[in-house]
Image (cartoon, rainbow, N blue to C red; front, side, top):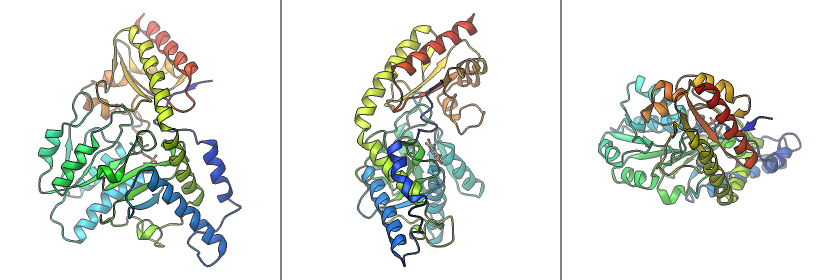
Length: 379
Ligand SMILES: *Cc1c(COP(=O)(O)O)cnc(C)c1O
């Protein structure tokens, strides 16, 4: 059995979440938008209950809209394109968009798409530890900036951006703040209302829920233009029949992920530290993002003096891990490049993502696998 240590790419669906979803596949098959009969009303009630669970898990303010989507990718696209389009419709002079070099491609690619269509984009570099430079961020928040997109937790190196300070700067300058929280929701305490976040994206399969579902939370008063037009579901913001089983699963998963978060973070943090203590003595090891606040279930290392392709070819016999992001499809990690790593260093990097099912056995397995690979490759 491979040791699965790729929880940033996806988490297994919680059996309790699967059980909660079960009746909504076939026993309760009504369309929640039908409204005229009892089964439809029951489905609609299940969707509203899930909406409440999502809002509560993220401590959203009372009137915050929770728009269900097919995942965090769609939620990010809706937020970024939708806010810009709504601003254009009301003749808003602010058009510049701002983000960080280490964002997920589901943020960077929609922003670059908008840039190609003529809207100015600023991509700020990060510091060597992966954190935003708050002074540079403040300096970049000129009067032409409409929206800043800053992720809560990085999917490769686990670094947590200082959202409270970022939100305060944005608020003071009249800039909207979008936060991709796919890696953070359920994994760190995250209070959308208290932090003053305007738009926030989450993903079901990053918090022990199903794949193919996510949500965009929109603070009341923030205008977003729909990007999928049709039957007017989701308050007109996302047309298409709501995926009732998936949405029920997302609500249940987020609630459960938040409920055992303190215990899980403590346990996985100790295992992660044990993993690093086992790897560091092999020599030439660098921990990426070290020194910055990080997700406790993340460890991203660069192994010195070995070829990355050869390293991963050996590791994959025993471990499900990744070099960089699951979404970068073979190209070297733009996140590690933004930290200043060379192509070779980025390729010889390993991302460990621990999760609920991780125990001592997986950690020992990982240490042994890296030790054996390094011994072989360093001769
Ligand atoms: C996984 C991930 C996404 C994409 O989420 P999907 O639900 O798979 O579309 C976006 N942003 C971050 C930070 C992620 O980790």
